[in-house]
Image (tube, rainbow, N blue to C red; front, side):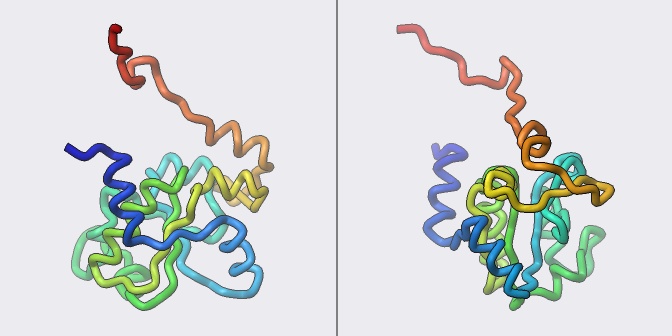
Length: 157
C-alpha cells in the first residue's frame, strides 16, 4: 500500500515544480500568477508569502468549482491562468497541483521547498496583519513541531 511519500513521488511525475528563486524572478519581472497557499488557515495566518491567497487543501476541489459554499471565484475562473501552489515544504502543494491539473487547470505549478525554501532564500514573508517577518523569526515559526507520539515507533532488533 502506498504511503504519503509514494503519493508525492507519483504526483511529481505529472507536476512541474519551480524553485523559490524562479518565483522571485518572475514576480520581480512583473508576472502576477495566482499564489495559492494550501496550508491550514492557522499556518497561513502565522506567516505567508505577501499577495498569496489561502485555500486549505481540504476544500480545494470545492473552491475550484462554481456553485459550492467554498467556491472562490478567483480560482473557479482561473483554469488558464498561471497558478503557483504553495505549502510549508512543497509536498501538499504537489498533491494539490496534481488534483488541479486533473480538474483541467493548465498552468499550475508547485513551489518546490514551499514557504520554508522561500524563507531560506530570504524572500518576503508576512503575518496575518501584513507585518513583515524577518527570516530568523519566520524560521522559528516554520520549525517542525512533532510530538513524541507522532514519531514512528522503533522496531526491536
